[in-house]
Image 1 (cartoon, rainbow, N blue to C red):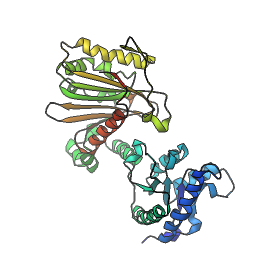
Image 2 (image 1 turned 90 degrees about the horizontal axis):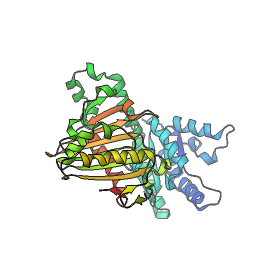
Image 3 (image 1 turned 60 degrees about the vertical axis):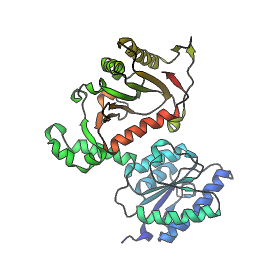
Length: 363
């Protein structure tokens, strides 16, 4: 049984200027909700750490990181989506330790944190009482879990799987019986570019959803397959990411793109080159039965994604995960059929696509 009085908790929170409305709200939530809920669970007040109230000597940034990594529990207030808060939350996610997200009910969470269960509060007396009750329940529940699932622990699971399993030397049936593969719908994992099969599925697809950096050579490599799909009546949707956004608002930024004679877009070099490659698809096809739509957005994302849906309703997705600043061709590719992984790929594409429904480059 847990001895709560020996456990530690750190609060990740925006701070704001002294006497600002944000500081008043944050301190009110800490004193009226977070402290009471922790004390009701049995925490010792001396083991609850608030960043702007830490009085120990030394570099405050080092102390904060040490607490984020070591504390048994973290409560993260995402109100106003402060860059420091989001950075510290990502560091905490890496540990897989219990983390509870809270935020003001008016906060619109970015897509990569929307799927994580969050406690939304109203900044009034009734909202405070409700938050105390919710926090008490979550604290007891989350501290009973060994590892908490979040976007980073999921990726770490992928990496651990690849490190521990050599695909070519392992019986496929063994892989298919593994829980992670069954639940996520992983069909195959390729860790080297030369392992990847030629994507003939593109030629016979009814719908194709493609998301990558502008300048990616995937379009050129499979130009014939794209043209064949277009000729057969496929609907092809291209999302081309262009560098230049604020990292924490990546999919919310969309620059308007001026046109020459309503046909030729004025874009940066990589986008313009990719746009012209895609335009060749129509010229290569024998008829214009298909549909092509292109949208562009500023981004710092590091994943490339292709989803193909055939005329029988079967769907296949290839997610290329890029670590650091490696090229897409040098990184790991995960192939999904059915399962949660495929659904996550669809939602990932749809979320970005829907944000730019007024900014169609070409159709």
